[in-house]
Amino acid sequence: MPFVQAAPAMQTIFSTAGMAPKDRFRRWRDVSEDRIVPMEQAYLGEEAFDATIDAARVGGVDFTKFSFRNLRASTTPRTLRHENHRTDHLFISMVLSGTVRADQNDRSSTDKAGDFAVRDTNTPWTIEHNGYSEVLAIAVPRERLETALGSARTFAGLTVDGDLPATLLARSFLANLLREGDRLPPHSAERMVGIGIDLIVACLAERLAQEAPRPMHGTLVIQRAKAFIEAHLGDPTLDPPLLAAAVGVSLRRLQELFHEHGQHIADWIWQRRLEAAAVRLADPGCTHLSIGTLAYSCGFANQAHFARRFKARYGLVPSEHRHAALMSTDKVRKRSR
Image (cartoon, rainbow, N blue to C red):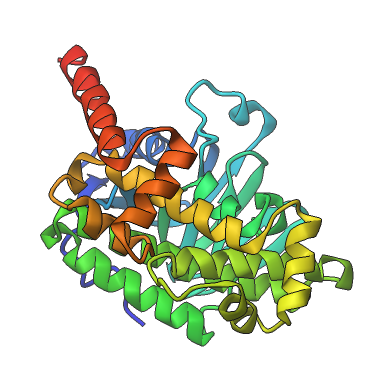
């Protein structure tokens, strides 16, 4: 299905059109590596290199569409040590057109249009495009995916089939988000991007479950449970029995698995709700939200309960935390002027 073609929110930030042929590939490398990470790149074609890069930032997340022909790109031990290398993000690589041959973490695949995979910036990868390709790269904070799914080594390099219903849903949601993203207020855009990432996490969790050896089954149940929690933090009815039913195991079994990881189900749910609330309280884009509204959006049934739990965790009531965070942000902004 079409993805970015109908997304006016994306702007062209690089094009070889009108550029001297001898300068094209060098300029491409500068811009593409600034958007992703330092890489070793080789053009595999014979005609003049031709490419474009379109970009958008929605809800604090960078989306980049690369269009080109006949290219090989690799991260290597040398590029991983480059001063501009980014280790705090993972990249969701979604094929929009053509095919991509990819290798990472002893996994090899040929990804077709609609498929996606995650590239881990901490380990080498190689991607090769023969013929024309379009790829959408989404830069997601590493912590965001690893909190739900565990170490990136368990899922980086795995291809998620673009024909699966969950993948179709995620792709359609992201397409609409890119199309409408520049019309959304900042807090709404951030919320919508979070939902999109939750859909990606759900796809990855299902993909992991397809091939996991039996010893990994418990870990994958935990990962799926945490992904479900992330997607439903705002649901005040979310509790351990509902979560167990959602991931298809008994409550007792789910409790055992969480205990094996040194955690309790209810404690983890409240921890994630409090962490999400703390982030929103510190966000200047959420200052229009009352404390009560923000509490409800994070799954708390009432403001008093939220205030008690928040102070027990952070040592401040929500209003004090918001004031301190916003004052700190304002000081940083003034120093940077």
